[in-house]
Each structure stands twice: as C-alpha cells, then as structure tokens.
Image 1 (spheres, rainbow, N blue to C red):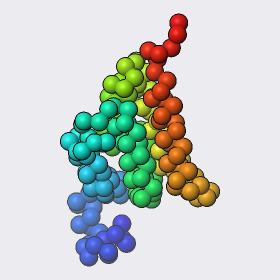
Image 2 (image 1 turned 90 degrees about the horizontal axis):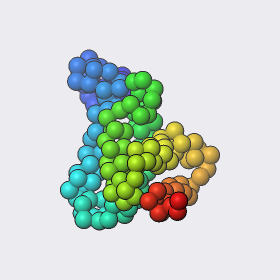
Image 3 (image 1 turned 180 degrees about the vertical axis):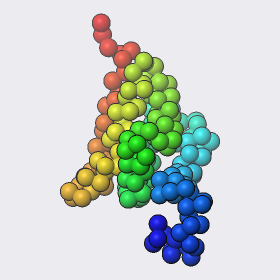
Image 4 (image 1 turned 135 degrees about the vertical axis):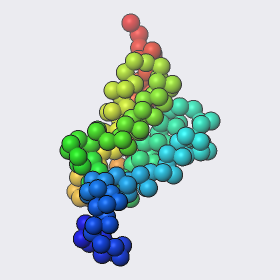
Length: 163
C-alpha cells in the first residue's frame, strides 16, 4: 500500500479511507478492468453481446476472460486469493458464473449448466494461468486448450444422449 500511495501521490491513509484495505483496492481495480467486458456481454455487439448464438457467446466470454487474466495476472491472482482465500467467493466470479450458466442453459438446455459453468471457469482460474505461464506454456496453447474444452462441453449436450 505504501508503494501504491507513493505512485498515486497520496498518503497511505487516503488509500485506506477510500478502499478500506488491500482487498478493497484489488476489488476496485478488477471492477475497473472488467467494466467494458461486462458492458459488452450485456449490450455489446456479437459475439459477446446479444444477437449471437449462446454457444458462440459462451466461447467468446471464456476467451475474453482468459485474455483479461493473461493481461492482468498479478491483479487477478490477488483477487482470487483475497478474503476467504476462495476464488469462488467474490462478486466478479459470481457474475461470470451466472452469465456462463445462462448461456450454457440456452445452448444445451440441461440441468448441469451450473456445474459445467464452474468447470469451464476453472480452466481460466488465475492460479492455473500463472502455473502454465511460469512453466513456459505459450498463451496461444492456453487459448486453444480452453476453446477445445469449451467446444467439447458445448457439443456434448445431455439432451443428445441415447437412453
């Protein structure tokens, strides 16, 4: 917080009054970084926004989240380990989970959409991205893997199984 206050030209007390603590600051920074993505999902042009098929939107959302996490790795790692230490207990995760669940439900029409949304979001968790990047996995390989997983999930709808 000392370094951030110095870089911003304010006192550390100003940061604490505005954000409360380190977690509050991280949440505010993530909110700022995700604002445009949220707007694109809600009302932007396809493939993220309304007007594209649900499966196309789901793929675009996962790709956008992966790009965001690759571009802001330290910040996203801080968010996902903040507070309770669970990457699942923050507003940002809840937002993306709800959106992806709705898209999977529309695309696949099944009861398992909530679980599948969690599983797909796990493929873009910051700790996994950090591990892959620090062990030399190129971003293109990560993108291709997430897309392959999402396509396989979207193609395997429960309603298509034979009894």
